[in-house]
Structure formats: structure tokens, C-alpha cells
Length: 284
Length: 321
Image (cartoon, rainbow over all chains, first blue to last red; front, side):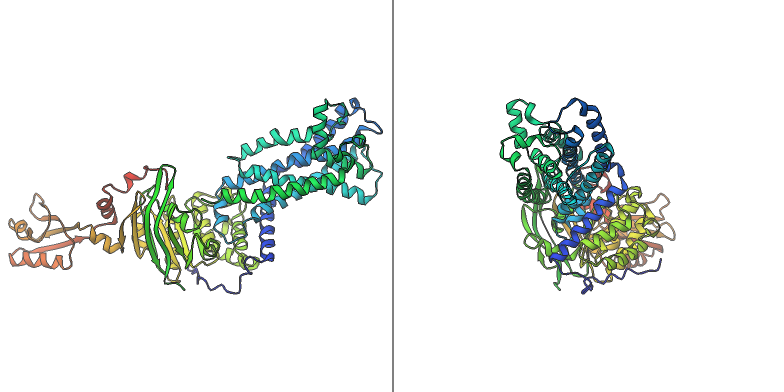
């Protein structure tokens, strides 16, 4: 081994991109996103909650509960798909919490912290990678639904808009998950967030069953639950049965506007909070 | 370029009840290597974490590459490379992917980062494992990859926190070689170590820390002289009964004579020209000297003299490194 190190400190002028520029930030986000996607490719089981789970839930709900739940103005099959999409995308945001908690738990965060990088790229790169897996999840739900007989009479644009509406909400929710992950002691405790918060959030809604048969107080919660607005919005866009349309609560009357408002509001609160938690967690 | 690349001034840091640093000051001139020597729990890693912007001191100031670590942490990060004590790598990426990621996030163009990564993988004997996932690396391989990551951007200042702890002797030699090659290139290095021979071999100056305080500071030679316990072994041509009395005024300590009366050994204050003086005195007394050996104190002796305990026995002490 006769090779020399050729260190020449500080001589690398001209090989650096401008620090702190927007292009630099985007490049940092791309690097971190790619890194997170490589992680998924190494451990494909990480993807089970966006691949296996949607298939399982779709089959379970359509064939197990479908016959027992009457839907006014249509079939349960036509009713449930938007709900399944909302359910799967909502619960899969747990991945953001677990992923960030894992990163903080391992040595890699100390490496990232001594690099002259745009630090929020750690968070944005995570949310970008999770948005991409959410898109995969949406495709799996759509394919399984189509195979089981779900159809929409809407045009291609409203159908895409329906998917985009739910994906946007999932993206917003992933910033809440990021806050949880950044405050978790371990990846395991981050995972419990899914069962304690996300599953009730997804189920206490109009996603699985019409809310009309719920006790009054529970119906009130369900009708104002953002998941209900998102689900009703997708149903409306897809021309699928939407029993919530007859409910007078404002979000049920304007589900698309309501879910967009919810998503924007959640991002406006959770994203700055997440970056504050991140700074707090990584200083000291 | 600043003349002083690293400057720590009265750094204090406590973790709960544990005082990790109790007012530590030192400075490292540009292009030199400082060895921060101390047992586990002495505060070495805490000092490195503050200087590399990973931790905030409770009191005190520090400048690295001319920038205040508290006021301009981002500027500091542009000029430093860090190899932490626990390898800070992404276990699910390959060695090469890890290095390219570090390069990209440091603002290097991807093409350049790839070239540089290949260069360093070669240098650290990791070329064969470059495209394997780091999770499967041995401890020594991880450590070498971490060192490679610290040097990727050719930083002005390198922080190497116990770079050879846990390495096998061959890897250790390899790391030493690389650090020696770096030294000539103008980079400033702060190296922490528990190994006295490592500080002796690599550092221009040594700062000894214990219990969060600097207890000694100097070149390896100065520190050895300070411990004042060089050892002299004299072998005579034939037994000389008066030999011990002859050298007694020159030697500081108890003289021990071997049963055959041929060998004398004594601890002495290390002083220039001591061997000549001893030989001359014996010669004048008509005693023939076959051999004289002055053994300079090792840094182990120094460490013992300074801390009152051998380095090895203290390793289990203190959880905070």
C-alpha cells in the first residue's frame, strides 16, 4: 500500500456547491430521501404495512363485514374503498415515527449533525420517502379494490384527485408522526403510537361504517374527525356511495374543502413543531 | 488561516450530577497534532463533542478553525472532520453509499464524492467490502470506514476520538500510518486516546486530562522529563565493591546491586549528560564499565506519576467517556 492520502486540507475550492442555497437544500433532501428508500430496499418487510396490510384489510372488510353492513344508495364494496385507502394511509404514517426514532437512536444522527448540511433535510427526506411509500400503498389498495369489484363512474381527473386528497392528508399526518418519533425514547415506543392514536383515529370515523348508527357523542366526534372529511371527500370525487352527505356537520357538507383545510392546518402546526423538536433533541 | 486551529477556554460541562469537564483549556496550533490523553471517564469525549458542535458547554468558550463553536456552529462544521468513538455509520447502506452520502451532505458534487470515496476505501483496505452492507462489517472495518468518512471532505481540522480503541494490531498500525501521512499535509488533528504509546507516537503535544481537568501539558519528551524517574542500569566488567558509593552522589534514589556485584540499577532524576557523568565518576574510581543504559520514563510512568494510578487499572472507572 504505497498510495498517499493526498489530503491537502481546504484546497477543494471550486468543488463545492454554494452553501445554504435552495439548490443545496433540495440536494440534501434528495440525498436523505434516497438513503431512506435504500433502507426500505434492504428490509422489504418494512413495506408490509403498505403492501400486505392493505390487501388483508380489503379482503377482510369486503368479504367478512361487507354482507352485514347495509349501505344506503349502493354496495359496501363501492362504499369501503375510500375508507380502506384512508385507513391504510393513516396507519402507515406510523412508519415515519418509527423511522425517525430509529435514526435518532443510532449513531448515524451524530454523523449527520457534524456535517455542514441543511438539517431539516433529515425530516423532509423522511417525509418524502414516506410519501412515496404512501403512493405505493394507494396503488395496492386501488388494485386490490379493482380485483374485488370496486368501480367508480367518475372521470380520470376526479379519481386521481380523490387519491391525491387522501395522500395529501397522509403526508400532513406524517409530520404529526414525526413529532411523536422525535419524542420517543425508542423505536418500539414510537410504534405504540400507531395503536394508541392512529387506529382509533382511523376507526372512529365514517371510513368503515356510516356514522348514523353511532351513539350521538361518538357520531359528533366521527363527523368532525379529519379522517371522515378525507374519506367523504374521496367518495364524493369518485361518485361512490357517501351516506355522510346527509349529515349537517360542516365538514360532511364540504368534505373536499374540509379535508384540504385539515391537511394544511396540520402541516402548519406539526412541521414547525417537528423541526423545533428535532433541534431540541439534537442539541445539548 | 488562523495560527491556532483549536482553542478551548475554560470548558465546563455537567451531565446531571456528573461533572464531565471542570474548566478545561488547551489550544492546538495549525498543522500540529494534539493528543488528549486520559483514562475512560476523564472527559475527553465531552471535550470533543463540544468542539465539534455536538454538545453545548455549561461555561467556557471554544474556537475551531477560527470560528466560535457557539456563535458559528455551521461555519465550524464546514471545516471539520469527525471520527467518533462509536462508529456513526448507517448500517443499512454499503460502505461506499455511506461515504457518498457524507460527501453529498457536505456539499460535494456527487461525482467528486464518488471518486473520493473510492480513494479512501482503497486507502483503508475496504475496497473489497465497499459494496457490502455495513451491518455485516467487523468492528475494525466500521472504525476504518468512520475514519474514512471523517477525511472525505479534506477538512482543515480533524477530530479523532479514540481512533484505534478496539482495533486489532494490524488495523491499528494501518490507522497510525494514515494519521502520520495526514500530519505532513497541513491538517490540524485532535486525537483522544487512552493509549500512551499512541499519544507518544503520533502527537506533537499531549494534554493529560483526568476527572475533567487538565493535569499536565507538554511535548511527549517534556512530560517524560517531568516525571523525573529515568532508570539507569550499569553493568561492570568485574565486581566493584565501591561502585555504589561512587555513584550515590549523582543518583537520586536507592541503588540496588545484583548478588554477583556486576549490575547496578538506580532511579535517577533525568538530566542531560547523566550517563557521561556516571561513567566518568566510575572511571576515576578505577572501576571498568561494560555497559550503561539510561531508560527514559515511558508515558505509562508519567501517567502513574500524574494520576497516582496506572492507566490500565482505571479503565473500568466512570461511565462517561
